[in-house]
Length: 180
Image 1 (tube, helix red, strand yellow):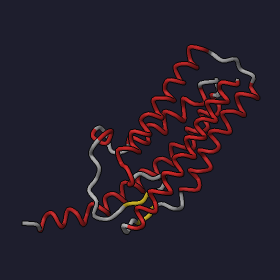
Image 2 (tube, rainbow, N blue to C red; image 1 turned 90 degrees about the horizontal axis):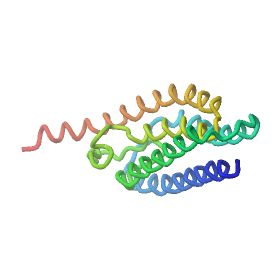
Image 3 (spheres, rainbow, N blue to C red; image 1 turned 120 degrees about the horizontal axis):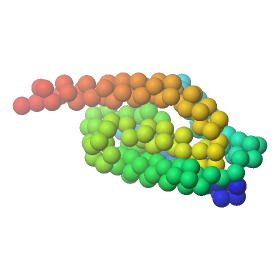
Image 4 (spheres, rainbow, N blue to C red; image 1 turned 180 degrees about the vertical axis):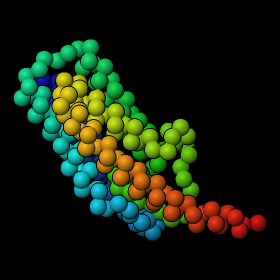
């Protein structure tokens, strides 16, 4: 249990690092006229992701389930892979990455790094981590509960983000059509 507690605390520390990066990047975006979308669902996301971390520890301690090495180590590798993918996204987007949906008008869509492969790779990391982190120590109720709430919330987030990106892309497309 000690190692699992340390893992969950490390993920919590990673989340705090994300928030620090997001605050800095939000200021960068604001200076360039960035527009925030989807403010309404953001607090729900914060509560859900905080609940994931708390649920992992609460269920693992309350259930008394033993660590199952085959499942636990496999899920730990997936947690690490999710972190690597998340930070690949963060470094690829640079100052444009945020935990909020903030779009700076006129900037082209990023098509480098993991964005060569898909439009929203960070959400793959969220889904993988949301399943894998609880399952490292057999917290399957937390994994199912997180997925049950996260998937509809993620659908809202994706609609919001796609609409924001499409809105930002419209002026670029119009300018490109008129350019000689």
